[in-house]
Length: 47
Image (cartoon, rainbow, N blue to C red; front, side, top):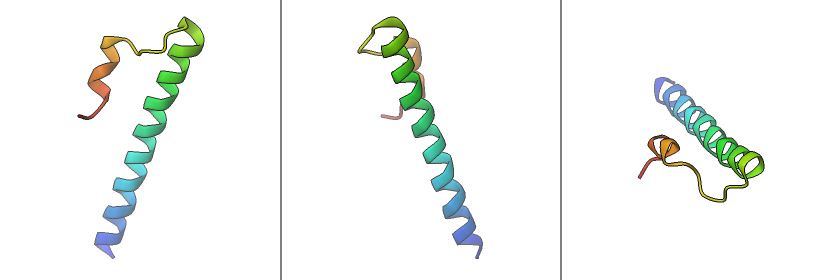
């Protein structure tokens, strides 16, 4: 049960981070007309 809960929480955290990154990228493209994100947002992406 503990492993299932941990798996669910990690999946949920990954989903939230993915949505945050994609929405920031979309906002940059819409508001600033940028296809490429600013360098200041690079710290949020995982290599």
